[in-house]
Length: 280
Image (tube, rainbow, N blue to C red; front, side, top):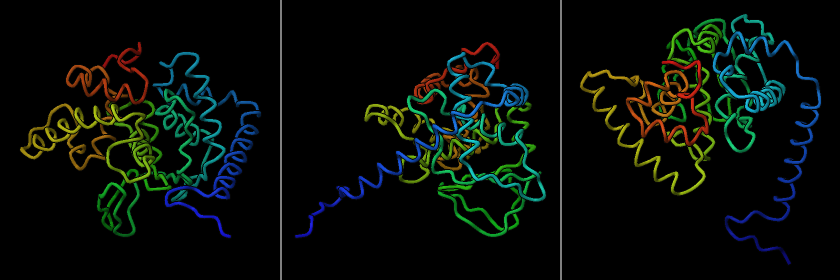
């Protein structure tokens, strides 16, 4: 007699396969972390990822571990003639992992399979609709994209500029990987990452919903305020822009939108406004 599997209930065999894959993944990561962390990577991060200098010792140690796995697991591709180097990989990895260094569980963006890096802005080859619902037209120049289950596509000059905080408030890697965090909710890119409790979800909606609506209205009237109007494109872009602002201009975000700052701070479990080097 065949086993009866109730709708929505994983079968025993499925659970076993899932446990096997998880065991293999953990075993692979243990081997990666057993290798000596390259000292040269610390120099790369110190030069190219300003924010990391503000993390405490425990957070920096955790970031190294996250970066080590991230660099090893992703499929890295240089495009447009770009030759990939450790500097490129580590600079991208450190910025991406900065987003998750405060989260309670190690997060390696498992659903991001590939990272493509261009030597400059690149031109799209066809019309596509992203998970955020943004239509990307053929012939459009782009600096970066984030796609469901990868790839993440980045311009190296913009990546480096963002990591060095040459234009505070703008960070391509933080923006695109905020989209990837958004996509981890298992639904679509809707401006809400995975939240732990129903109370967290209710607060997210009650605080960020009206702020998004206000931004859309203000930008529609041509009133450009503190937050970039690109965030008015849709809720997904609003979250990505908020993420950039939270890490790049935390004092301004806290002063202009204190409740928004607190909601985002609670999610990332970091407080950039308290970092000594963040005076903006």
